[in-house]
Structure formats: structure tokens, C-alpha cells
Amino acid sequence: MEPDAIPKQIENLKSKQQLTRKERRYLQKLENKLSEKKDSNKPFNIKQVLAKISIIILVLLVIAGIMWFVASRPNLPPIDLAGHIEQNPSAHILDQPMPELIQKHMLEHADGKGKSGILIQYNCKKYSCEKNLIDKLKTLVKKYPENVYLAPNNYDGKIIITKLNQRKILSSFDEGQIVDFITNK
Image 1 (spheres, rainbow, N blue to C red):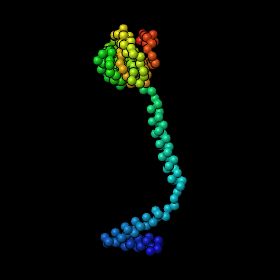
Image 2 (cartoon, helix red, strand yellow):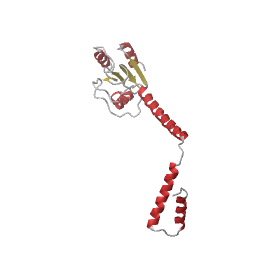
Image 3 (cartoon, rainbow, N blue to C red):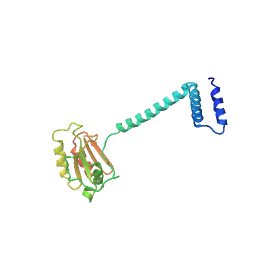
Image 4 (cartoon, rainbow, N blue to C red):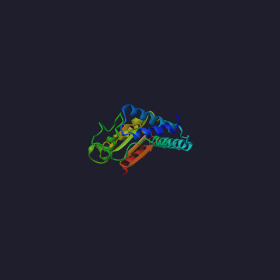
């Protein structure tokens, strides 16, 4: 059958007022053949393929960039109150990490009343800590029972001290720096 014969047959059948079911099916088959033939005759367009590949590569690069940016940011404790909950920790010296929402509440006011809290957190899992570091920190915190808290953490710093809108990261125990942070407003 000639390529031009199919469209002519379709037009002839469509021009008739009423088609039988068999004729409608035949007409549908002819139209499908025609569309398949048109699709197969399309030339390969390298520009379109390259444009699509370029878009895919660009999207993948953007996603990789966002993932790298998020992964490279240091993991640090909060210093603001946004999203805090009205809940106090079980004690001023903890042996488990303090949830961030409770940390934020302590930054607002220690034990739910009074002046702002100060948190001293240590990470001896990721950093090597001297044998008596935790005991030194406990002794120091006991000197400020009103508003200072001590807890382990998984943040990116060996010792991190926080208070509202302030943070200090120490690589070793320095009582002078810790006391200055606690006592200076």
C-alpha cells in the first residue's frame, strides 16, 4: 500500500455519514498506522537530546551542591529561643544529651523562671577527652547551681558553652574562659 493511500482512505471513510462498528475500528487502525509512520520518519534531533542531557546534568549538580552545603555546615547547639517548649531538664548535670527544644527553653530562663540559662556541653565520643574532664566540668557547674547546666552532646566541638545569642567552642578545658562566659553578660 502506498504511503499516500492511507490518508485518502481515512478521508473517504470520514466523509460517509454513518460508519459501522467494523469500519470505525478499521479507521482507528489506519489512523494509528499513519501516526506510527509519521513518528518513525522523524529525524534524530541531536540538539534536543543534548538540551535534555544538559538540563539533567544541571539539576543533578544543583542537588549535589545543596547536599554538600548542608553536610559541610557544622552541627552546633542552638543559641535562640525559636520553637522552644516549656519543659525543664531533669537536673542541672545530665548524663544524657539535652533535647534542643529544652536547651532553647533553658536559654530563655533557667528552670522555667529566673535569669537565662547557660549550657555547657561536651563531646567525648568524637573528641578525645582527658580522663578527668567531665569531673572538672561537674565541679565548675556546681558553683553556679542557679542557671548553669551540663550535658553530653554530639555536636561539632569538644566543649561548647551557650547562652542566649552566644556560643563559645573550646578544644580543651579552660576554667577561666568558661567562668568569663558564665559571668559576663
